[in-house]
Length: 101
Image (tube, rainbow, N blue to C red; front, top):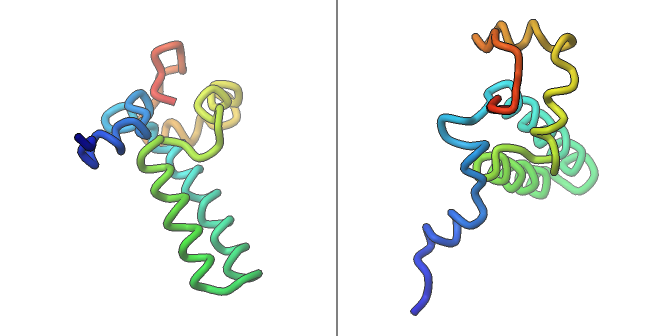
């Protein structure tokens, strides 16, 4: 018997970085990287390819919560540098081992 499509997607999804545990600033930064990548491909190969890259990378961010492997562990480093961004999104607490990012 074949697995349901939802089961296949759940295998790809990282639940610790999606849903209620999704870090909004991290997601926005990853979508920015996806947009820049899509724009670069669009300029080099055409709008259709650029759109396909952006949609593909956007789906990766949606299902996994991040685009760059290891990104969630990197976000704990620049706490002081991005404190204003965390305050903007209402995340005033200092990140710890239970942080969403």
